[in-house]
Image (tube, rainbow, N blue to C red; front, side):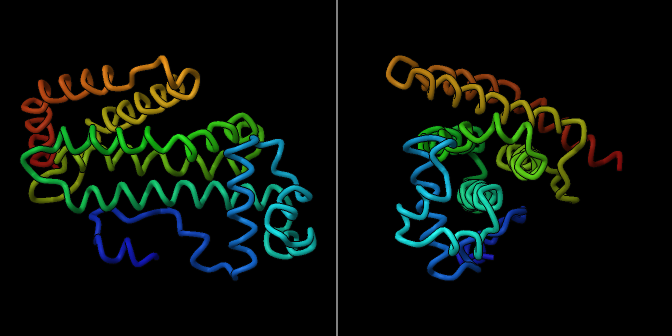
Amino acid sequence: MSSLQDEAEPALGIPVENPLSSLPVTAQKILSAARKLLVEKGYDAVTLEKVAAEAGVNKASIRYNFGNKAGLVASVVDSVIHEEFIHGAETLATVPTDDRVRALVEGKRHLLAATDRLQGLFDILPHALRDELLRQRIWSSYPWWAEQNLRLLGLEHPETGACPAELAGLGSLISAVVDGLAVQSLLEPEAFDVERPLRALEFLLDAAMPQLKGMATAAGDGV
């Protein structure tokens, strides 16, 4: 695991390792070049020829380190998701207990501002639907984020530390809201005002928090 995760000591482990942590320098250059091409020119631009030219290496080096384009793109996905996991875990470790809703919304604001990483993931998504390896890699982040959302809101049981199954849908719903806002932001970044729906999300969560906390405590007591 990275030193950032060790220092933050989050309550929830990060399920995707940082691929950069175990790669040699040449492989790191290749991965960085692939990410740059993905963000700037899209998925179809991530060819072995173009990545090799961008990284200043030969195609054989890419095959040696990643196997083929599918292996390279899978590592790009892992690196992007890992960055967001790191931020989320650090947010969880430092969130003030008396302002949970605002901290969660602020974290989502940060995520939505990372348009370069989001654009890369959304460009990969149509291909991932037809590629089992990529589909599973991207999907692996969703259960983690759903539970992360509940923990940021302090909706784990005060004694057991478990997030109740009854609220799992809320965690998934928050993630779905962020996905939808990200799509709208990428479609029309100048015209779409992401602050309005974020304020609405904060208002709705604030209003529901007393009942949600009661549900979390009651669910834990029933275990």
